[in-house]
Image 1 (cartoon, chains in turn blue, green):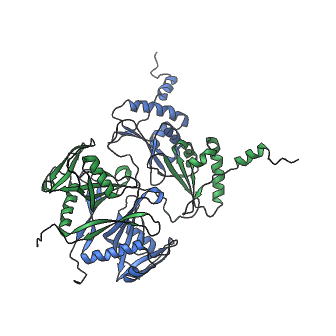
Image 2: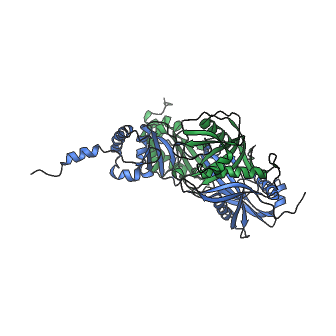
Image 3: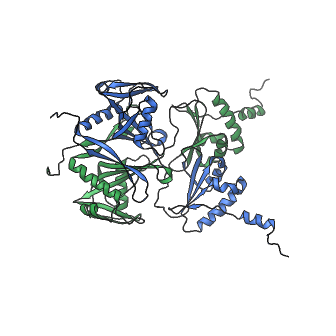
Length: 281
Length: 281
């Protein structure tokens, strides 16, 4: 009687010939995720031959232009073999536990494979009765606006509100964007964009964070004239007052992207007849 | 006579006890660069013990809060050992040949160790005699503004000028920023900021790039009303005309940062009495 089960050695041979299965993306890429693939392929010694077979398979497929590997930190032993096979480092996950590597097999993709190179920050210009909320950091002896980095997935206004609360204990709400600055090559050779928002305070009692050394409500006209103030903070505050006088703000409007259905925020400069200022012609 | 040279076995012992030498940074970090350190420590087997000794040394030094390794792709075999020692992935170099990993030894640093998570793009709103420069991509059947990603170290205006030239062959110069949109979670779970600039054309003959399928000068009023136009491009063009009417632009001003001496660009909304429009009260 013939066994329906092939002998174990045949299983082993078939298994040896296996290749990685990735998910296709819409840019002619194939994405292999180590947390899925590694369950069947944990041993380092098996990785190289399987990768070699997989590259032969993908190279023969004209639909595959790019191969991606998402490597979880616990599978970091894959990285050395991928690097030997001319995979490039692409980017890391925000939590530091995943690395993306890629290799271009053919063609010039219309989609970028650059990694993001811009940090975004947000500051809060918070005014209460002609007084401005200001902080000093431990290392810099100048008053400045409270603020910090925008988190992954966070919008500019929410980031400014969060940073103002973390640094000063003041709760506030978003009114408008005032201005922003772009440093082309800052920390880690990355670009840095810093967005200054006008926030309306909802509470007034300051509770300072250990990250900063001092915080207080400072008379706006003192901030504009004091030598004890960072030039860039001063510039943004002056810009705010000039634009308020002229009825100009940069407004934020949430909407949905026509093609991707993703939520987005449009920032546009707007003119409104000034309501608070008396005419000063 | 006593030899001045210690015996070779002692040399070997001393060498075995060596630790990595890194460069201190201003955030209480130590940075070890594999392209420098690897000349004396190429073999994989030696890396683990040397790393362990180095971590003991750094952990005993209260001035060291963070340890960084910059690993060149040819030294990718270091990564597995660093991951086992709880180093996290931080970021990659734009050319894909270097990976930064870090480990926090003590304290909470006031400096961020997040990786950048924002892509920046720039588009050009280019008008010539009531006609707007528009393109169609192969995959999307709508007219849109030419544009693409901002390169590392590039400013927004230069990126828009470059993308307009690459896609349409039109040379142009920067006038102002019109508006921008912020997608919080786009490609690769990164945020995406797209800045629309107003550019003045310097040449007029279109030479299209293979990346796009069509380009032409389209009557502005047709762009505003045609169903064959992307909603987001239309929104930006309408914003441009409304703000032109009111004399509002977002200007770019280059300056130098007070503390870091780095060049930066400030973007501020400005009001100028409109020059081109007749009064329409």
